[in-house]
Length: 93
Image (tube, rainbow, N blue to C red):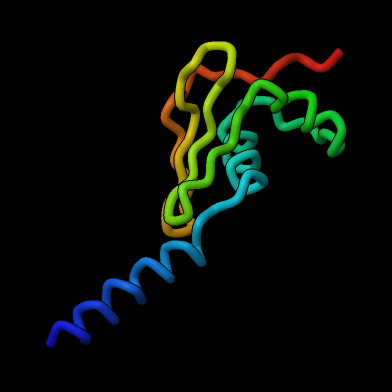
């Protein structure tokens, strides 16, 4: 019984680690939530999201704003949720 329980826990952690969203998924979700529907190149997106810090916790991931020191989004099991609805990307120069 103990081995079965350990196997189920290991399988759950493995699934959570496999479906953990990466930084580009966070960027896409944040971009989709913004009202401006413009197209940006990869270089422009790197500049726009330059204030974000991505942290991977193996089974979950988080983006934080390094200026405001607030959490912008978190991801778990393939989904990304935006926490700070008022966050805006840095303007492109």
